[in-house]
Length: 475
Image (cartoon, rainbow, N blue to C red):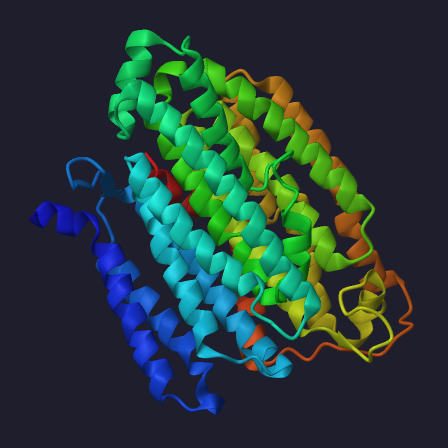
């Protein structure tokens, strides 16, 4: 029993802290609701410090249903980065919109508990429990701005399609359980190793389960919810949603295929190869046509899921490590970009997120423009920034597993993506402003932008330290 408690210690601590946040929110005045964000950041940092595993650390709990190890901790770091940056970036935005409620930060905090169960699960029931805990939180924060019709639409669409995808996943899970007689990853692997994938019910079940995973990471053709949800949700919420839930889905997927589907690697590699190509290509091509920067970044998020799927296809240690590193990098550069976007406010002539809003920004706000330039260049994968390091290791993992053609497709897609990322830069530095735009970063937003910018540069210039750090965690 003691070992089982240790295995879920992060979830226990997060739950107690979440209760603490609820109490603080209850006694805090309306003017001080943003303080919940700072308490949440402090609590998640404490949890990170108290649960640091040593190299090779592994505690299996509840009769092999979940495990706490350095791999799960690596993704916990990603969730924490997303929460810290997302919470700070939301403080001023929520105040400006008049929706500064403590429950927004509490719901984000609770969603991480579900994510932790997802990446720690070695049993399908625990995985599904974590997945739904995370999903319910995401539905709420997507539609959090109830006075905005786009946000309402975002929450409803996410809920309906999310419920549908969860049903598909659960239906597939029932087939897998019916054939193998177990929901534990290791026992499923034993059945597949002994009997192969010839049985139709097992094939059907696994395809439906993998489709459920594909929905969570917004892989084409299971992406249909992502552009509308990401563009309609409150901008800081979008930054969080494009990073943390996606990291949780990738972390859970990797552990599932790493353990349960290891005997049938060749079969699912083809499935994810097709998804990777479709996702990268579709996301980039449609992003080119967008004049709304927020919607462009939504399609960009789809394309980045395609890059990370290359690491899944590689099915080697380098690929899995590259995905964890990529998610950390993606957290800094994507949430940094969304934080700047959230602080931009024009005089009501056009939509706030239009490309035209960025025209002449370098003259009125040179530091903000420089930060946005670095985020766009990093998202495009231009050296010596962090985004280049992330893509380099993803493509290197594919080449190591003899998927050279997939790495080439990834490089070509990265070249295509440069076009729409550079459009933002061109508007900032080479276009004259047509509308008056306010881009006054408040203290919390400025901190997020500064921290994200520093890490985007540091990881790009000094990659060895960060690569080795992730390598030691994801073994």
